[in-house]
Length: 125
Image (cartoon, rainbow, N blue to C red; front, side, top):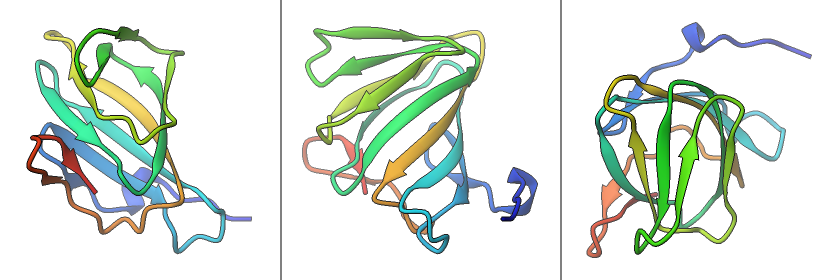
C-alpha cells in the first residue's frame, strides 16, 4: 500500500491544459490514472490509439463530441465518459470554468507520452 499526491508528480502541458500522471505503467496496477485540467474556453481534437480511456469529471463543466460532432455529451461533476473504441473525439471546456477530470488509461501510460497532431488533425499518443 502507498499514497501519492498530485503535488508529488510533474505537471505536463498537453496543449489545452495540464495532466498530472499520478499512477503510470511503472506502478504494477495494470492501468494508469491522471489528474487532467482542461482550460476554460478550449477545444481539443483527441484520440488515444494505444489506450482505452475513461474520464470522470470532478469539477467544472464541458462537452465531449464524437468525431463528426453528431453526438454531444455534456460533462459535469459526477459524469464519466468512456472511450472504449479508441474514439476520435472533441473535448471542450465551458467558456467560464476549467474542466477537471480523473483520467484512467488501459493499458497504462508511461507518463512520458506527448500529444502529437496526426494527419487528420487529431492529437494522439
